[in-house]
Length: 259
Image (tube, rainbow, N blue to C red; front, top):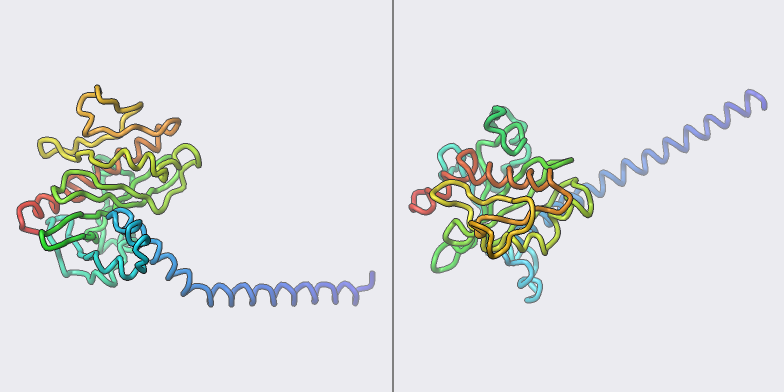
C-alpha cells in the first residue's frame, strides 16, 4: 500500500470520527433540556407516589403539573427543625448542596449511620394539606446499600409517626435481590408502621419475616431475602433521617405547631 493511500485512509477515518463526534455532541446538547425536564418530571412523580396522589391523579386524567399543585414545597433548617427562607425552595439544589462545604456538614464516623459522608444543612420537604391541615409529610431520604447510594422518599400520615409510603427513585442495587426495594409488594409492607416509640426511632428492617406474633410488629418490616446488606442500608437510612441528625426536630416542631 502506498504512502498516499495510507494517508488518504487516515484522513478519511479522521474526518469520519470528527463528523460523528460533532453529531453526537450536537445531539447531546439539543437533547439536554428534554432530559432535564424528564428527570424533573420523574422526580415529581415519585413525590406524588409517596404522597398517594399519583395513581388517582392518572385515573382522573390529571397532568403531573395539576397533581403537583396539591403539594406544598418548603425548606427546613435541619439544625433547628424549622422552616427557613435562607435558600429559595424553587431554585435550591439539594443534591449539589451535599458537596458544598457552605451548605453541608461533614459527618463523623459515629454520626454517619447512613454512610452518606455529609448531610446538607437545608432539606426540602413536601406537604399535602387540606382544610383540616397537614395530611401527609413527604421527606427525602438517602443512604448507602450494598453497591450504591439509595435515594427516595418516605411519607408520614398526619400524626407524623405512621408511615404512609416509601419509594426509591435512584439506586444501583442488585436486580432481583437488593433491587427489590422497588417492588410494590415490599414497599407495601411499610404502610401503617410506626416510626417512633418513646420519642426514639423504633422502626427497623429485620432479618426474616414479621408475623402477627412478632413482638413490636408495628415497628418492624420484613428484610429483603438474599439482600442482607441492602436491607441493613435501608434500616440505617431510616434511622438516620428519622433521628436527630435528620427530621426528628422538624417533626417534633411540626407537632407542636412551632415549625
